[in-house]
Every structure is written in C-alpha cells, then in structure tokens.
Length: 323
Image (cartoon, rainbow, N blue to C red; front, side, top):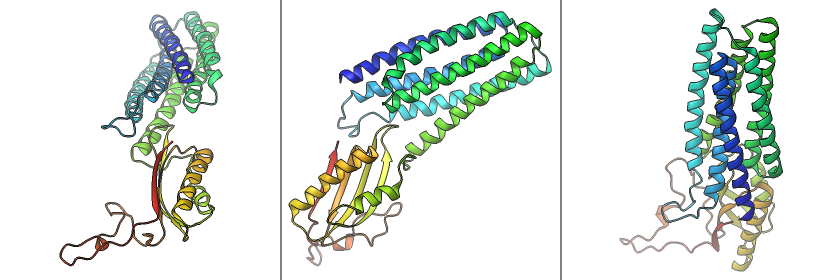
C-alpha cells in the first residue's frame, strides 16, 4: 500500500506541473498568435488526461469491491478514457480547420514568445519525466511517462518553428507544424478509442495469445483438455480468465492442486490475476457450442419433476479465485 501511495503522490505532482505547462502554452499561444503553440497546448491536454487517468487508476486500486461492483470500480477509467479521446478528436478537428485558414491567410506570429513558452514547457516536462521514471515497472506509470516524453518532442518542434519565424519570418511553418501536432494527437486518441472499445466489449487483451494460454493449461499434469476459455480485461491493467478443464480420473485433492498450480502459473506468465476454473471429469461439456446467448450447461440433464430424472453427478470440483 505504501508503494501505491507513493505512486499517487508522484502522479499528483506530475499532474499539477503538467497543468502549469498547459496554462503557460495556452496563454503564450494566445499572446503570440501561434497556432503551433496552441496545438502543443492541445497535446499537453492529452498528457493531463493520461496523468489524470493514471492517478485515478491508482486511487481506484485502493477501493475494495462491494456488493454492487464485485470486481471493483476499475472500469470507470475506461469510460473516462473514451470520453477524453472523443474530446481530443474534437480538438484535432478545430486545430486542422484553423490551420487550413492560416495557410490561406497567414497570421503574424511572435517567434520569440513562442520559443520562450515552449522552452518553459520542455523544462517542466523534463522534471516530470525524472519523477515518473522511478516507477518504470508499473504499466500505468509507463503509459503516463510515454505521454509526457512525447510532449517534450512536440515542444522541441515548436521551438524550431519559433526560431524559423524569428529568423526568416516564414509564417507558414506555424500552421504546417500545427497539422503535424494535430496528427500526433489524433493518432494517440484513436489508439485510446480502439483499445477502450475492445476492453468494453470484453475482447481479448492484445498482449494475450490465447494459443499460448491454451498450451500452458494443456501442459499441466492430469489435464487432458480445455474448452470454454475466455480472457478479458477488467481494466487496462487487470485481466481475468475463465475456463473449463477436463481432468483424467484423479482424487479430488489432486484436482484442487491442479487448479492452484494453474492459477499461480497463469498469474506468473500472463499476469492474469483473476481466474475461475471449472473442473470436469465424468461429464465434460466440451461438445456444447458456447455461442452468443447459449448456456454453458445442458438443461436436458437437470432434474425434471415430471419424470423424476436426476441430474448426473457433479464434476470433481471447481474453483473461483481472485488473486
């Protein structure tokens, strides 16, 4: 918990400093009439969103699950990411429209003020990068670090644009660079939209290879088959798995040891922290097609009051465990 608290403090400081960068570049862009600087401010806004979501995820990790949200509140960050990406796309459209207008009718830009504002942004972001780099093993922090590092590169481009305007007076560099920054924002926003939609649709996370997961399960002693395998994401960092495994004839205690071993190996190799494994032996249900809307058990084998037919014996055991 101390490590999570330290991450939260680091992200709060980074978020506050990035908001200062946003204010400086936005004010500098308005004062200097530089669309490139305003575009870079839009790019900094993506950093604010990224850092805010990273901090939000750290805070939500402290919140326990309850009866309403048995998996916790981690998916709120997905909804926030989707809203943020839509806002960023709107910003990109606005920048592109204004850039086209300025290509047709160039606006005088104060190159010196542009350079000063961008250099301030680079200095502050460099300090933020130093703070975030101490948590490089955490995927959430690494994503935030990537956003801020990318903004430093965009700010260097703005400095170059300011120098070109200051030395040569060529005003077209400003809208041209703005279009480049807009494309950078659009690329990042599209990636967020694509990943968020996949997670909300409970798609398989892109870092998971189902073939490798199947191979890991089938390589387990006593396991002779696996079906109804599903892997999905609870958040951008938390993954869950459910599966039916068919075991050869073995005592119930051995079946439980198989499940415990699988849980540990799936967590260690694939970072899957939530596993639900159903064990089958006498009556495997692998022949059932588990398509959309279909049940995962055969109703015809259930107890029927009209004929008094009993259900078949239960499988050796099942396990649902959250790590």
